[in-house]
Image (tube, rainbow, N blue to C red; front, side):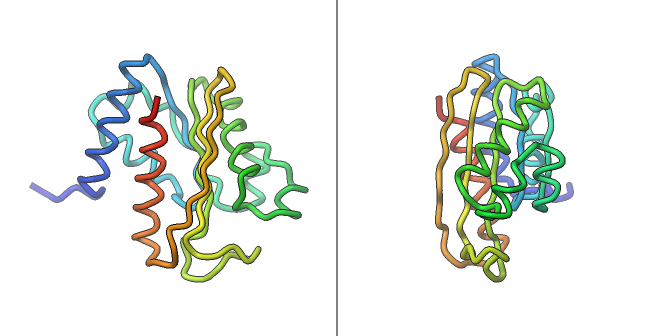
Length: 165
């Protein structure tokens, strides 16, 4: 049997998220920058994910954050793409463009060097919101580690946020 292309530990965490979403009768969409769709890919590896995962918006560039999800271009110009307001707008934009009940957005710097706005490697913002207006924004500084380590940490944090009631 071939080894899975996604870390089995990430899939195990995603199983809990998918089960919790099913139990709540909720669906989710992701809005991903630094994770480049990996969060949705991890969720998709869980049996029954098709019942809860509507899809993902991968908005790696500033231009695509505006074009695909309606993030204010002036905000991006002024404040960069790694901050609380940008992840709020990413999450809200994903909800507006999807039938999902929940959205999770991730934007950060995975390195190997700081981004063009001077944000340090390891800085990641998350936003989880629902159609009912509930909104959680979290900032994590995972420190300067390798990009694979940081990507994994960001996925685990996003899954943790999704699993919280």
